[in-house]
Image (cartoon, rainbow, N blue to C red; front, side):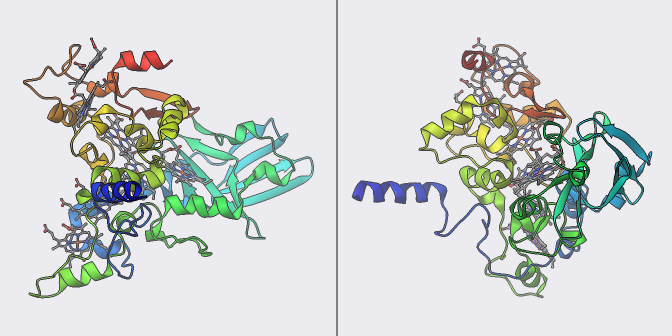
Length: 355
Ligand code: HEC
Ligand code: HEC
Ligand code: HEC
Ligand code: HEC
Ligand code: HEC
Ligand code: HEC
Ligand code: HEC
């Protein structure tokens, strides 16, 4: 018992977190929500950058999205249901078969469009429906990934899959900012997508103390996630990007290592890496990513993070001096429309051994 307690205390000390800390709510301040627009005045440059990022764009009203509105109407036969699906302006999805006809007004579009956009509509009874047609950056309109394997069970389902209440809450939960489970109303426009307070916590108090004239604030009343230790930050981002198991759960870590589909979850894969486990301060996501911007398209930007740790006088790599991620973090095709970067950083030989 005493040993267990000592271990618990040691691990609490390691992650440096207050009791009650959770990855879903990693902040300590007690405050009302301000809404991301409240941050624009004092953090203008950062705000502009974040607003344009795929995080912020990952949920929008479909009417705003060029990709979903150009080239309409778009029509195709759906072999699985025998229905003719037409996407009309609105946008509105229409299914027609024999003399039957049904429509679904599309009100929420998930996905920035970097990979794909899947709209959701709502039936009169309140049920949310995932449109059977999506848009993909590598091919335009097509049957929604995953939906292709599932045959519609009724004419109504030819418009798309009905989501359970729980699934609906999960979709909005990961794609909006201040959404709370059980919330009935759809999110306000400026809370769609992943905005400031999703990662920093509610900011009304912060805005107040920072705006107050000549009153040195005892606390900034806002979370700076760059000051979290690496395991905590990896957990926090992992709420959406694949939460890793505890360090001590060797069986779960092994399952992640052996399952190629986990490449979709950077947090789960990163913690398998020696870079993460053998660096004194671990390896936080923000060491390689500016969380307010999209990933850089330049390999040199990514190399900088690697070389900062793998520097001279030690030999960096026997094989190459640049483009590190191309060999050590290769991209993998996980689903039809998606390439993902494997965040389990390792030598190509080690990945061969695992096959
Ligand atoms: C009245 C102006 C003002 C508003 C409004 C404001 N901030 Fe700040 N914020 C500041 C100032 C000033 C700092 C300190 C900057 C520095 O030290 O360089 C700061 C610092 C921060 C930090 C770093 C905290 C730390 O511990 O170092 C974060 C994170 C932050 N703001 C987020 C936000 C978010 C999110 C919002 C919107 C909810 C927001 N701010 C609104 C003025 C403001
Ligand atoms: C656990 C959090 C989480 C939940 C729940 C979730 N998403 Fe996502 N979603 C993500 C993340 C993270 C990405 C980006 C990386 C990826 O694709 O894995 C994403 C990407 C997307 C994309 C862009 C295409 C793509 O594959 O990148 C669409 C569309 C999408 N989600 C729709 C939905 C819908 C619809 C639901 C509910 C059925 C849902 N998501 C539930 C986290 C989530
Ligand atoms: C996806 C999560 C996420 C979102 C969304 C987000 N931030 Fe941050 N923010 C972070 C992380 C992580 C850091 C620490 C970065 C680091 O240490 O390099 C940070 C750091 C900051 C800082 C401190 C910067 C500095 O140089 O010290 C400010 C200010 C800030 N964010 C404001 C904002 C504002 C304003 C928004 C909305 C426009 C926003 N953030 C949206 C995760 C986020
Ligand atoms: C925070 C520091 C840090 C960063 C950043 C980092 N590494 Fe590492 N990496 C380490 C440490 C520590 C080890 C353990 C072995 C050692 O000391 O060389 C390691 C080990 C490795 C190994 C050997 C793994 C094996 O399977 O044996 C490779 C390959 C590697 N890193 C590549 C990279 C690449 C590529 C990047 C950038 C994408 C990177 N590292 C970023 C600290 C880091
Ligand atoms: C609330 C859920 C959520 C949280 C928390 C979150 N992300 Fe994301 N992230 C997403 C979704 C959803 C996408 C996909 C956006 C899209 O393209 O539709 C994404 C995309 C990204 C991307 C790819 C951006 C690009 O260039 O397309 C990076 C990098 C990323 N996230 C890093 C982070 C980091 C680092 C953190 C923690 C500081 C974090 N995320 C926290 C949901 C989240
Ligand atoms: C063309 C593919 C390729 C590129 C690009 C590449 N590496 Fe490697 N790297 C390898 C291979 C293969 C090995 C294993 C070689 C061996 O053990 O003989 C390796 C080994 C390593 C190791 C382990 C060295 C050791 O002594 O165990 C590290 C660390 C590493 N690379 C870092 C990097 C960094 C940092 C970069 C970018 C500056 C980089 N690599 C670019 C293929 C590559
Ligand atoms: C050692 C550097 C490094 C670390 C640490 C790191 N990433 Fe990445 N990440 C990359 C590279 C490199 C890419 C690919 C960039 C490109 O597209 O060329 C990437 C891409 C991504 C993407 C885009 C989708 C994809 O699979 O390509 C997401 C999302 C992401 N990272 C999330 C995270 C999260 C969350 C963490 C923390 C758990 C994290 N990353 C930590 C280097 C890193």
